[in-house]
Length: 289
Image 1 (cartoon, helix red, strand yellow):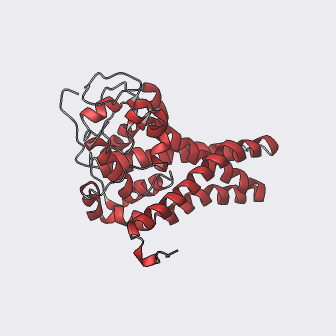
Image 2: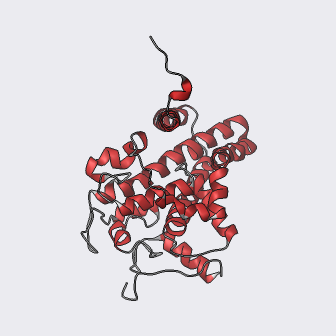
Image 3: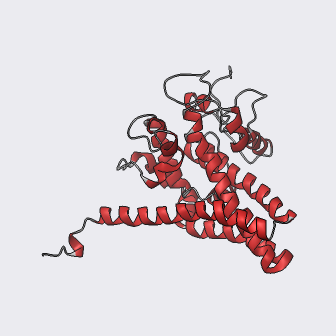
């Protein structure tokens, strides 16, 4: 039987297979660690007040890194800020283990351009499982470079993209180091399990609810052009991102919840940065919202 020379195998196929392998390995490692190892460790050894405190703090930091840094700043350019503020937001977003800001931006821009179409990377028409996390394991190929071309000109985003793996490792090591300094190996492992692995799983799934829940269930007060919906409950988990129907109607608005009583800590953070002189050019849909 004639063997195929390695050089004859298309490099793009090799790259996709390699990427899919590591994606599967990482995905199932996080799932297994969070569903089995994290509860088991808690039942056997228990988690300290420090573990839970780090869980809460890192949940907020990494969640806002995604909503404010990745989403409203990098993807939709709903405001501007100094490079060092952007770097801090992108580092926090990197700790959420949702790819680099550049890759996240390209996927999300494609979602807006092709919402509910076959080219939508997390197409809700394919069901809850696929839009929630199945798209990571069975991604829709995309060779359209326009979705990533703009962010590739951003030097801070490209810095974060190059050092993304290091940033992820630092985010996982941080709770271990803090716990270890507080209570030795037991404290280190407890901090890593709960505030590292468990917190990552929690942030991932809360964010994934925007792609799944907010395209399947909820209200559409601002438009019915696509499947986007508002969910106040998802907004509680994602710092305001659950007002998804408004966001799809006015994607460049720095507010996802435009009304004063909407729970949108992301817009409050952006507004606070503006008041402190650390943000500018805040964009809104219109004076009527």
